Image (cartoon, rainbow, N blue to C red; front, side, top):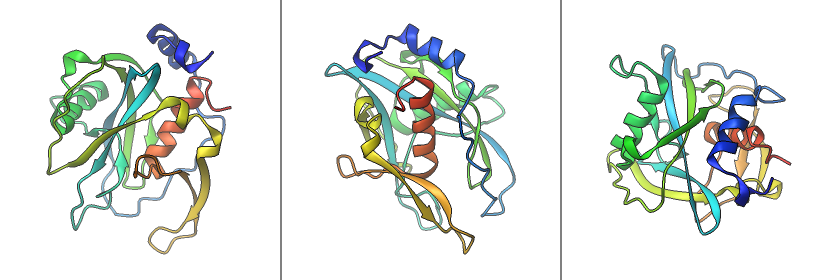
Length: 203
């Protein structure tokens, strides 16, 4: 199915039927000695210019933030009042980029994934109608931008590199080419490829 022909109903069906990555990435070792915590992230999808786009953020840089300056999806830890990863993902997206929860239609979720900071993350896939006037929270988000799904699905736009973290043995890490000056890599790149595989767009 061509990307332009993907409907929300088709995306829901693909996500419901998907059994997970064909090659499961090894769980990273907890590098920062944080206790394990559950989190939810929103993978926001919207359609414009005859293509689906994924919306990303670039995090604001802070001295002690290991993910500062990196590209990510909006999201964060599940608070007691959230009750579900979807609630947490919608709340965080509203707080971080001003995306109203009532404008998001939940299409499904991807399998939980472990981050190097010992978060167990549930990725929630949701769509919203364009346009939206984003309102980034400057303390957390430096920029909001989108990348076309067709560009992300082009196998020539990403590769595997080996990266050492905290003097550990090098491990494979996904890097996309730069798009609009932004570099998508690591954990968020892995979630992106999982979504592409779930939708049958990984080639």
